Length: 402
Image (cartoon, rainbow, N blue to C red; front, side):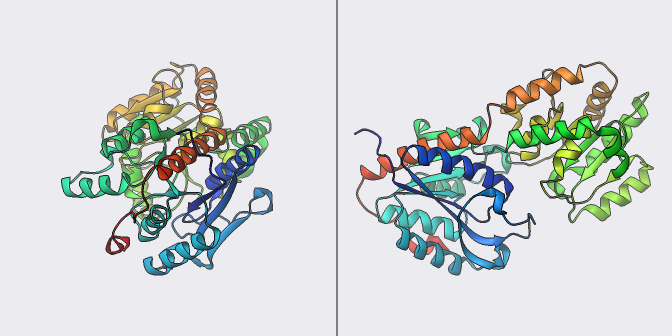
């Protein structure tokens, strides 16, 4: 049987942030050219974990919001599951693309697709080494994953994990974790053209390492501070360190910085996506020290902005995006001395920063919203074809929707 082209694909996320909107715009545009409609659906209008501003007029998306006046974290599983199933019954899409399977509404959407012989695409960036694995949990995950017809994943480690869980490799497509490269490139370049004035206005140093992210234990900021202190002892002319973000660990990090006497660490607070290209554009290099990170989209942003990158091997993007010695370096997130040495190497003139920045842009150009759109369409066709070949049945017992 040839691939069955779906007429409508429901693209479902808990909440549409800037990253989701960039991908959805590309998917809507490409799918329309091929005669397919993309139905954009979000469960809630806001999310506490990522307090992004809601999509604006420029996003040019019609997003169906199930709970427009609620934040995602305030919703119960039962009410979210009930409303997504109600919407799917109304719209009857040929395929659903769902980000994850661990929450009841996600499994409810999968069950609806199975029961109605509709395609189901799993969007995932989990990888095997994210956490210790327990055999019975992996068995249950495998049982659920195999109920999806296809998958759209971040990159190679994420693809390998889903294949391990039982998804046929020919139905796994990459390109889930992408950002609006053109926007970051253009706006970072604009910042560089007026670097002196903009830097002075924000109180930024001439040269600095940049971190962007939540102040969360898995982001490993404590070891980054220790590494930065060691780096300052090594470097003849050390760069500053600029932190963009906020979160539960901020008081502890501020206390650590004070005890280490690190006056050259600058806190810039949480920034909306409109502001980030400015900080990328004026930075000298980017650092992502996470001990656990399924992907880390800030690496995409930094590379699109033309920066050399230092990326922990625990970041899910490291294998696909970082070429050691070409656009930056990977490192063991627990090796403080190793990171300090890489920071010293980066800032001391031992590497060609401009060439690394150009290499970052070349590498990330292959990981764009267009790639997401192309492979979402391919995954939807594969999932819909798979659904047409099997008998109607429920995906999972209702008890496991919880």
